[in-house]
Length: 381
Image 1 (cartoon, rainbow, N blue to C red):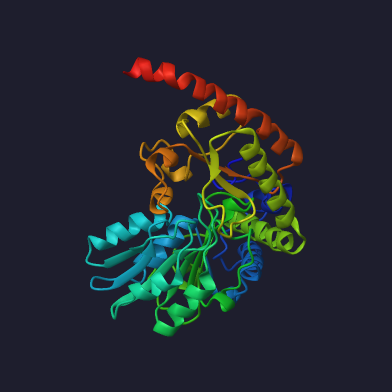
Image 2 (cartoon, rainbow, N blue to C red):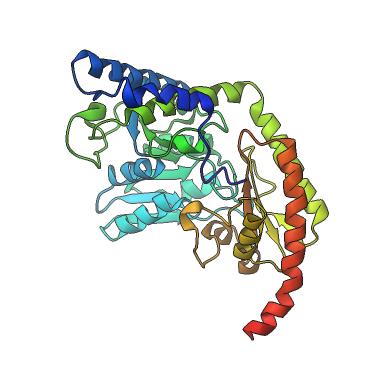
């Protein structure tokens, strides 16, 4: 139940990668026949990813994942004196980079979400300045699953003549992405969030968008990202993207949403003092974020782990953090509820039996922790 942290390879993805470790192992930049065989694998994967995003193949730049894509989008465009508009609920790959850019003379506006976790496009509009050089908004939040109104934000950006970057790491494979309809210039995705391999991702760069590469060296990826291509990873990414595109068309997300809703309603019915963060906003099909009164989320994560259930208190990138979720706090959730919140995120392979198991494990664990709370408070005192 922690798919938003990462997902396992699907068997078809693993099978597509295997020949490129040993048989077609050559450098895809080599002009000899083995090199060109590897190149064909990369080119096919680029077509598969472009199909998922609805863009040209030449607009797909392979990289190491979402964090690199986010860094490239911001650091490849913004300079001292420029203004960045982003939101207070972004992934740390955006927020940390934005803070770093502030120290270099870039002005940053962090738009707060509404209480349901969604961003009001009017707030983006109000934040525009003559020096605004980039707008960066996540398409789906990694902690709450809330899907943002990116088409409306894209129209605002287009009207203002400001490039739009979307962090679509948690949206890709869960909601349709058509970059032409959104109107974004840049968009980041990562393979391991959609049953592909870790360490590979892509940045959509619209034709004509001027952006500097973070990684300098050879002329790889049309001089937009230097470094020998991770051919097996890219091939697996392409296969995962093709599978994701098919599942969006075959109703798999509706099935997953039904399982998520069954899990959510089951926990609400079984556990008093329980609620959902972001329940009224549009969300990706696999994600729910719940709070449990009088329970510390870190203690609950450990208790559930001991029962064989993997969940998260928030972003995997903040595991071990003592502060409550910045996303929930930005939504106006009080610290007590933020510290008592857990994210459940379902795999595409999740079954009804899996949900039934969760509905048995979680209420018992919550009840036990609540019973222990008075005794632990006395010890701490």
